[in-house]
Image (tube, rainbow, N blue to C red; front, side, top):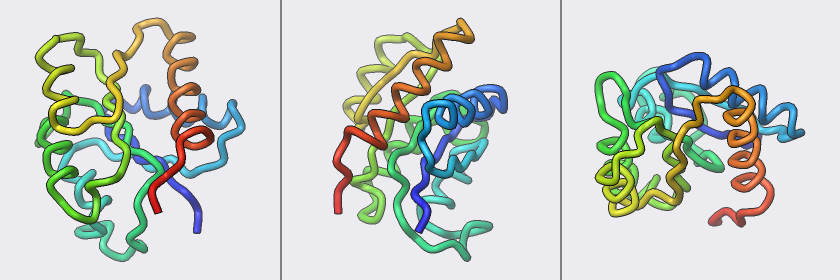
Length: 142
């Protein structure tokens, strides 16, 4: 089975940069991208348009906060409240530097909070580091 990384972000430039940075770093997992919180939960729980996929947890979820439909913090709340997804690592990657977003993200069970850099090269480097850590360094749950 191919290992995956789920990226939840409505900005196609950011998702393309993440995929490119991971490929450049030699990380060979499949990057699944969804543009809203509802689809993220559908993917994680193998329902809706994702109902036919084998239900296996991604290595990590990269989660933006400002999403259409369902805010990223609400998505995180549901991920942590659902037994099938409770242990999936979640990295918030957001442009928000609001202390309340950071605090609430950690209170809801985020494994990491990273502010999206504005600089292109820095974004690529951050994406590479996130990918390397969660796929090469971190030991996933069984």
